[in-house]
Amino acid sequence: MQRVVYRMMGERRGAARDGANPGRRATDVEPMRGWVPALRIAGGIALADWAVKAAIVRTMAQEEFREVIPGAVALWHVRNHAMILGLWDNLPLGGRKVLAVVASVLGVLVLMQIVGRAHRLTGAHRRWAWVFVGLICGGMLGNLGERVIHWGVTDYLSFRWGPYWLPPGNVADIALFVSIPLAIPVIVFELMGRARRGRDAARTRSAPPVGAD
Image 1: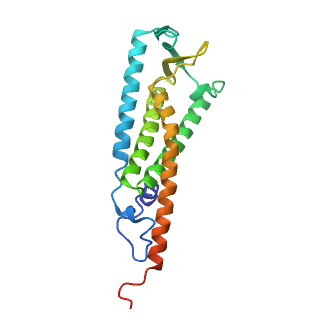
Image 2: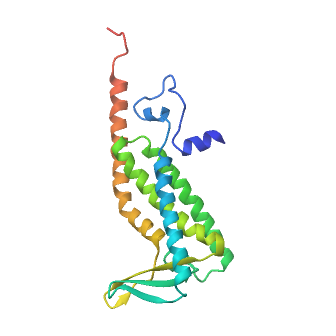
Image 3: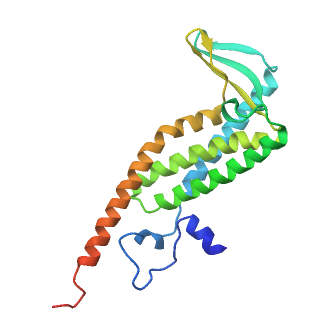
């Protein structure tokens, strides 16, 4: 089981193995510290989300609407019992709980893979992955942490779009929304890393043995 966890988190081995390909996974022998900055970002987002939600609950009645910037931004206190974007609102509570658990487990597995693969990128490229994972984890923690208490999410921030006010969201939703475009550079850097490791592996295979004439 420990080996499976290590493989999911990118720590493939603790020391270089004889005959192992040094070009593809040379960084696997390094301690993987990507979870530290990612979890710091996630923790900051989740704490900020919970703090603002608590302030909204204390100071505004449900369905209360206040324009902060007239015609542009408003506080609109809504209790959202549906999933993201209002999906599956017609399902019974038990069904929504099962979906939330499954989605959370799948999300964590995917994020672990991202951190493990980003561990093999260059230092500058790794930071993009840490921010990406931190934003997603923070958004998940913010909303799922609230659902654990009373199975509902406090939404409060609404923007004007033409003649309409958009359905309100929260800090966790904003973090998840911002993470979407960051997926593009993370994918590009992973492809660049694979190409680089392939070139390094090809050079290693074509190099003459040490000591050969």
